Each structure stands twice: as structure tokens, then as C-alpha cells.
Amino acid sequence: MDNEYDSDYEYDCAEEIAYAVDRANAEGSVPRYLEKEFKNERSIDELISEIVVLHDKISCDELEGYTGSSSEEEYEYIAKETGYSIEIIELVAWFYDCCLMENGRSQLVDVCPECGHDVLYIREEKDCLFASFIECGKCKTCFGFEEFDESLRYYKDDN
Image (cartoon, rainbow, N blue to C red):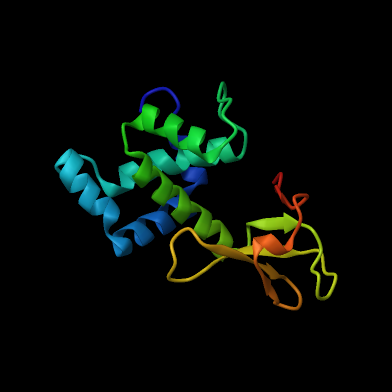
């Protein structure tokens, strides 16, 4: 990846990259993919860093010239830039998102139907890839996304 990769940006994503590397090693698909497709000529750290940096830039609207509006378009763009498969990109992006969920950095703008509190977190459903739920920050009641209307929005921290 030549034009959009940025080592300074990689430093800003160090926590997410380390988390994704640990998850990828434990899950096993990424190391098998690297062995099969690249004969281990690329490291897992390199693969994950490239994907996480691009995914984070796109998520934060910081990738100049990127105009996609869906996850599928994002994954296709990253695949074109890196040469990695869509499936691996999707898995690494999920691990990145899990890091945000685990650290309370994936929030929604709405109110809890149980207690009225306005801090709602997205949490990973453990032992189930690509599954998450909503948890109230106060009463800890859990909800499915279907229990909220279409006005549900992600909270973006500008810091």
C-alpha cells in the first residue's frame, strides 16, 4: 500500500492494532491466510496495520477522496489498496470494532427504554463473530438493535 498508508497514523491506532493482532492470532484465519496467499512474506502486524489504518481513516472521515457510503464499498476500497481479500478485511475491521466496543468507545445517541439514561454502548456478543448488542451505561439492561427505531445514531467523539 503506497499512497494512503501513514506510519504516524499507525501510532494513533496502536491500541486497536495490538488488540486486532491478538484476536487474529487467537482466531487463526489471518495467519492461515498469510501462509496460503503470501507464503508468510507479509507479517500479521503489517496486514493488520494496513487494514486498521485505512478502516480508521474511513470511519473518521479522514481519507481524502474516499466517497463510499457502505461497509461493502469500504472493504472493496481497502482490498484494492492492499491486495487483501474482502473476507480478511471484514474480519480485521470487526476486531478493530471489538476493541472500541470493549473500551466503551462505541456509543449510540438515544435513551434507554428502561431507565431513560442517554449513554448506550455497543457491546460484542462473546463467542459469536459479527454479533453485537446495545447495553445501557447505567442500568446495564441489554437490547437488540431491532428494539430501537431508525433514528439510532453512532456517537462520534471529536477528541
